[in-house]
Image 1: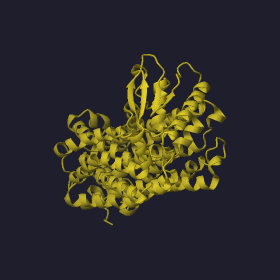
Image 2 (image 1 turned 120 degrees about the horizontal axis):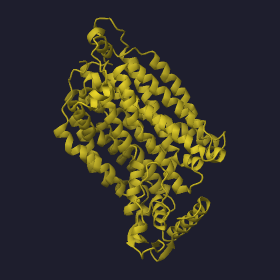
Image 3 (image 1 turned 180 degrees about the vertical axis):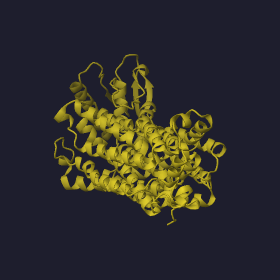
Image 4 (image 1 turned 135 degrees about the horizontal axis):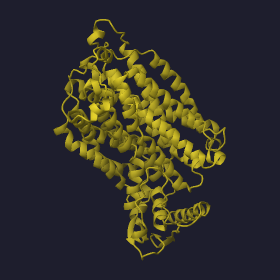
Length: 561
């Protein structure tokens, strides 16, 4: 591993310098903790929905959980501003330590919350508060980790050094999925999903206390960035980082360039590849067994881990921008054909049924909503909305046909007609019961028409699924591997923590975090289970078109001035 790079006063021995190995280990571990939190909450979204949104029907409850999942990301840019300012004014180490402590406390806190059955409406409110704390803390986490490593690394190994922060996503995911799987197996499904204090779903959240303790211990061993200490000793650090970063056009322009040319694609691509593909498309739409899907995702994640390091190392040799551009271009051209291949390999019987017996929703267009809700509080209860959300969650594509004004929506499956129900004005229990009846009627009609209730394990092409998902993983890792060092190199040291954290968390938090709810809204509006891909395609295409012309090559820049 490369020797720690020193500069300024630190180079003359006036400041302690933490060995690069310790810097990378501490930074990567804290980022692993971030990804552990992300995947535990995302994986357990259906269980969260069951226990904290009990007043809603199953579909609305899941949407509420996914909305809350995205809402946590909404606060990341706010945290980026708060802790970026702290990191640029006071120091990297202090901001770094505060964020991991907040994040860990909130994650453990989720495991200690009362459920709706125990505390009523206060339970989801407390859950929302925990997610806000998590999102805010995470806004300061990544920038601190990337900067800390980059400011210690030698210039010609900067990409390689920071790649271990990027690659920490892989162990975070594997640990999270392993813990969830083992806990689920050990406790049994009924105990795991229970609403009581001894429920198994609490264990993965509570176990994060161990990661938190190790991460804090590692961070306490770190000294402050020597480059920042030299800057502060010369009284050249930013006195008003927010004003300097966003009130100065030269710096604001760099923030906008980073957001448009890199982070727009990064958020869209990474979360589509490592979250939407398996947990939404394959499990919910294609109906493959969750255990199979989880194992597949773990295999892809483990196999992709070295690729972050590989592409970052390549960027140290040939430059950052074209490595990232290759990744986003591969995703752009690969998503639509790749997802069609995934469908054929995962559930060929579903594709056959769609072709042989198409589904049509006949409804008054004025009564159909765009079911987009980032808070999870929206009520989509017209007969059209209920029918479309049930079909979308069942992974069934459908055509839209205009019905008579004010008429109740009807789902036609070949020669079978299934009326929906008007939910407006119904109290929550009655709405939940009515929606359940429609769901049961639709399920029976779909099975009668030849639609499979689940994917046939004997016909699931696991090697093929792995191959397609690895192509997606190559795209994601080529894009994500060099991003940390590129962001560090792009911004002046005085405002680096503030300036780079904001575009990163707008990209990951707002673009990436809202992939599930936005894609679902697009699917329900169009009736096409592939149409949700237009969301990541749009943001990825923006970066593909702008990166070659707007993003300067940063390899070789002096980052210590």
